[in-house]
Image (cartoon, rainbow, N blue to C red; front, side, top):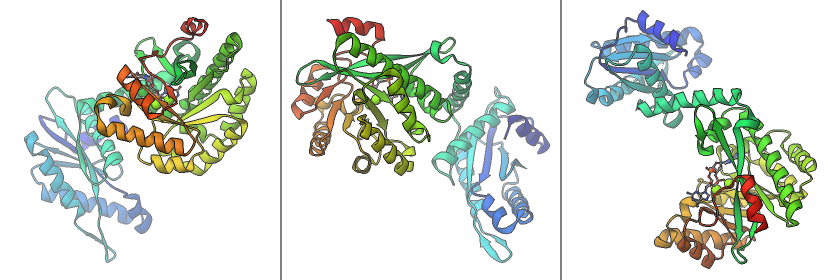
Length: 409
Ligand code: C2E
Ligand code: MG
Ligand code: MG
């Protein structure tokens, strides 16, 4: 619902102006089912009945019907009482309704905004709306109180999405490369390509912030193609310059893998950059999109048949790692920084890393330990039998220019 419409509703239901108090945006869960089962007329009847029921039950508060299956309530109450009120509203909505002698039980989700005199009505509504959509995403049938952080982060998401489309990929995005080191020989085996976004107004934005947002748009495909091409091209140049077989690890979003032309894109990129397929490592992170597992497995197998290596990134951080491991065709496991950090001081972390290494070795995988920051962590993963290191102790991710020195020294 757009905010202009929202404000019309507030005015129409005499909710304007809002004084200090609490604004609740209440939306019925799965209301389409009522319309689909009993028709729109009965659906409208249910909505009217619920407004009447809420008005009867909460006579002191102002109540209005909003868009679709939503209601607005403004309560002139102490902020401390808002949770109790929300729970009462949910209870009221859950009481059965009879349609054509069918007993129907509905549930609702609520977004709550604390209205302060410094806020405009629009700001209060946005806050309630953000809280409502977060409730719907995390736990339907419950309520959530808006926070300034949630509103700010929503605003930032919208800004970054717009910035993607206005950005010049070649000028604002660049890759840095973090060396990977063979634990036995201490030599550089290759690099992981990591993306950076230098925005003229927002400054340097980390991938942990912009990649998840890009994954919610088709921009991830554009950016993914760009990264794959640039990284392969760079790797080929290093191999030619040094005469060594250096590998290049590229992070690929599952959203890219499920694109119909993903396999062809990799084949074409390898051909265009003349990079040997066996030097490319595709890093995948466990993700909701693994629900499309069959398609992903099939694509990965085709890539492996070409000689491309597949790595499972941040292994152990998702919730179905072992299941994923048994199904996806991967050759490499990457142990995340979160497990490595201070592992020399934690029996539990040590045991977890040891188990991952044992399991990986039993399955014939290469094990890469990520985010090594000190000698103690390095010594531990060495003693446990990891194959490769990556971390600030050795090198931070570097611009391609800085690699010249590294490779010639
Ligand atoms: P990742 O693939 O697990 O990358 C490892 C991250 O750990 C990188 O952060 C790297 O800079 C950081 N790191 C390496 N060594 C150390 C260390 O010793 N200490 C600490 N504290 N950190 C270390 P970065 O570059 O910010 O990337 C974050 C994540 O963003 C990556 O995690 C990856 O999931 C995603 N990402 C980065 N580039 C791309 C890309 O081109 N495409 C996609 N789809 N995702 C990307
Ligand atoms: Mg990675
Ligand atoms: Mg990782």
